[in-house]
Image (cartoon, rainbow, N blue to C red; front, top):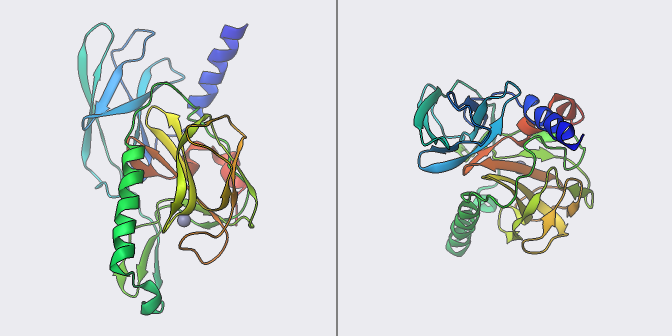
Length: 277
Ligand SMILES: [Zn+2]
């Protein structure tokens, strides 16, 4: 009985995620020729990548694609089976266009002093290192629930041009929830990092295992401790307006194999519909 239930959950968890093989997406790449019940070990650009079993029974690599990836580029995935075979497969990055927003703001508000720039560089490095890890001691579900329900106020991938200067595209989805709205873990994992950074404000980074992470920014307060295990639905913090923001909201982001992608790709269309502006 228990066995049947587990198989069913596995099926549900993979079936709801569509292949999104473009910059800022998640590619599902079948690893052909693996007949074993044991998952193969797969790499892309020397980085371990997450493996899932597809409803068809095939194994697949689940690969995050960075926003800076070029369309039509071919990516290669090498994999080792437990029988000792080594295979290579590839996929092409598709086209995806994100909207552009032009803003003019007071230049004095924008300028950062040298000390702040050094702080920002250091904080980026800390987060980059954290999301580059591949942990095998935990495996949270790839199919996620919503951390909260609120209208989307800014979409992932939005290209912002401020005072005619292009900025980094938006690396998360903003949800316009009021201050102190509880934020719930969307999948199991543990606390990889938390603290207060210049842009992100008070934040929590969850490690869901096998290279999958989710990030929560601008919190009023955290509800976590270092390395704390969380399960789906646990409150990890509360919405706020800390960091570089104009008002209270949750900036929610996800990363796989070190690449930031849109977390809404993991929640299913029914959940996305609950966030209509
Ligand atoms: Zn944001």
